[in-house]
Image (cartoon, rainbow, N blue to C red; front, side, top):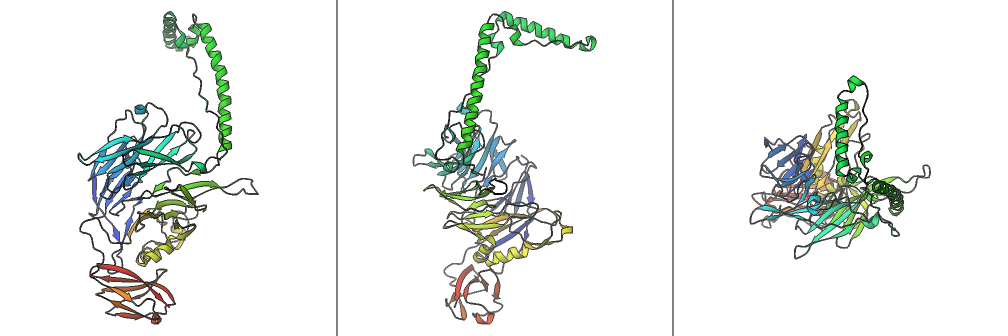
Amino acid sequence: MKLTKLALLIALAAPLVASAQVMEKYEGFQLNRMSNNGRFLIDGVDGVKIIDRKTQEQYTYGSNYYLGIGNSISDDGIVVGTHNELSTPCYWKDGVWYDLPHNVPEVFQGMASGITSDGKYIIGLMSCGRLTGKAWPQTQPVLWSLDESTGEYVFSILPIPDKDITTCSPQQVHGRYISDDGNVVLAQIVDYRGLLQYQLVYNKDENGEWTYTVSGAEKLIKPEAEWPEYPTRPTMPKPEDYLTQEEILAFNQANRAYTDSLEIVSLTGKYPKAPFYQDFVKERKDEYDADVLNYNIESQSYITKLYAFFDAYEKNVTNDNFNTGSQRLSANGKYYAANFVFSGPEDPETNQCPTYMSPIRCDIESGEFYHTYHSSMASFSIADDGRILAVTPRAEDKVLTRVPYIIYPDRHEEYEPFEKWIAKECPAAYNWIQDNMKYNVDAADSQSGVAVRDSVFYGSIRMNPDFRKMISYVVNPANQTYESYYISLDDENYGDDSVESVSSEDNIGVYPSPTSDIVNFYGSISSAEIYTLGGELIWRRTGDEDSVSMKSLGAAPGIYLVHLGSAGGYRTERIILK
């Protein structure tokens, strides 16, 4: 692939003074992948664009969706995906694309899907039938492990079940995600008919052997389900197989005469009759006729058994499902999230059950599921502590952006608006979004014809494993172009010369807490700001003040956040006003 290396143009909105948080806006980008350390960002919609935030360089490949698609990226910038129309798994490193090695002949589908943060393991899928000798499944999980002595990846195939939950051979098994230690893999299995999707969770033991556990199947199949055997389609007899040598010669002669006759149709106006193999079967005709009769009988039986299986299928399934490709594995391998599709209560007016989709979380060790029954959410990220970042789907005719929420592992039925969460977690980031992602467009100026009044678009957010770094994209209602942002709530740290956090030698802080009025500051403070939990800035240090009266600010009793800056970085502390 030809490398296009461009200077990265980033519209940066400056964060608050002395704050080590990072807030960046990217005009014209649809950012949808990010390395866990936040250094590398990917726009993988039209080809793939790779952004190195440390060096401020951009790499652009192709203009087609399949060309170098960026599915995942490691902390040191290894991008995995595929090219050649989804048939060649590959990875990108230091400006060069490499094909991943394998020993599978005639691959018609192959893809690298996930990579560990350290780049040592890559998970993916391939059509391995030519190697395994089995036509089904069409794809199965494959793994590439880095041999550090050679710097090359080593290919292996993960085991798969012979039967799906409907007792047939599975149609597809896709390797999707791998934990950062390389010991847990999340795969999606598709049943024989291509209608049901559920999960396989792989674990690697101390000897390096992989075993799998089926996960979520009990939600798709009724407990009382009984399955008839899926019938084998009979093979139609081929008349050419019954021809003697003399009969083959006779057919070939007739076929040549037929071909010659076609050349003079325009002169004679007569179309010749094409020869058929069955018309030349003479010596073994009785045997051929008997086999054809037997085939017709078996075909009728096959159809009867097939419809019986379809009837059983309809009775046995719950009509619930896991949304295709929606799985997300936590980096520590303890949880996965997916989008669960389920039926709601019957509508008395239509006598139909509406279908909904909402996030579901699985505790991998216990196998226990927690389902958030909300009809319009989809999971986008899952943290190492089990929190889910979910968003409402985009409704093209009503709104221009998705609305994100945080779902907590100990409060499954609750979901906190991201707006409220970010205001509490980092008021500086909250204020930056208010200033930089607010849109005000008249209907006449909007390409969608929808007026947007002072609306803040949080967009399609994706977060790293500790939920301290995030990317998101929105659609600008004025011109229907993408705009993205990147936010880090902590210091940028790539393991080199990045900014250090406040050290113990800085010794900055506030006291007392609780307080009835006065808040005092100590240490070599260069800046100080006080925010409400809703993110409202109520005071900023403008001189060398070493204290402030909360009553003089009109502050009501409650909890407040104090952002302190020094030469070494920043610190956020909470104070309680009685």
